[in-house]
Image (cartoon, rainbow, N blue to C red; front, side, top):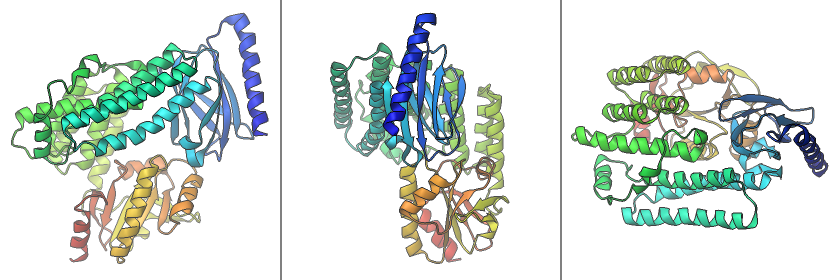
Length: 473
């Protein structure tokens, strides 16, 4: 039945393309497929120019959709909170089948355009592994680190050349693959100096050879064709942080460097975004990202006000301004000594409860999302160990996804069970009130249900010390 469905879709696409090509050119494509365990009954397809199409699933969770006046390039399709990039070109009839319980790993394309998209998808997935490997290699000397990143880049280029020798590829596809390889490589090099302490950062900077960043003459800070590309945005964030740090070192020589919490460094970072990035979407995303990051970690109220005003002065995005003001207000309300906002959580027997009523004694609250599976696993393993060491502490874990809980239920059932596990009844409103950023955000509350720390992290070296200090009072 599944094979038959694919044949039907391909046939529809072929005959549709043949008919339309004869009468009106070929600036269109078909996209279709099937969603297993759908989270909702729609798929959102967005182009680079922000044109959005909402595609409804039929009664068997399938769809086929024709895109008129197609502009070849990267598109984003989204289902629930999950998304993926696809390449669409004229006359494509791209089909896919995926299971939301294993979104990326279950995704496979068929039809015209499938070979290129399967190659891209594999590169995206492999890039996550490469990034982790590169991260672990930053303790190497600059020479050895360069040798490793050069080797990774060459292996990726060789893999593409082998694919190109076997399959006919478009120029658009070739450019995208090479840009992905290059910007992943650039981002890897940019992350090299960022180590834990100021002294290590200084040592890294001082040890860099003159040609370590030779590729910078080739980069474009405003490439609109790549604005949704993970590798490109990873490079932008890494590069701007890097050049801001170099500037920061030149005029704050005596400051104990703490990247996330340093007011001077973060102001430098916002300044470079403002001067280097002119594309409004990219600029806003970067300004917002680093402002929220500072607001999330800083304990300096005066610094928060300065960075907040700096963001407001630089952005023209009214929606961003409203969101950042909401976030700042939530941060203020979550200060130590206050109580959690009055919001509802739901257990996996579908019982709704007030969050403050499930707090028992000293409580730790963490959050997770299906979008960050590695974090989910690491977080829950850590909690399992902490429960053994601190049986007197209540550990609560909350899924924050904005869709039905079936996938979260499946993920928990397969790994850890449902004890003290909840999801948010009103995810959008509740995540705003709890100012959940980053995903590692952790709350510690005392026996009186009062906030002791609203922005710690169970992976911090100081976390258990915070917990012991509270338990020993």
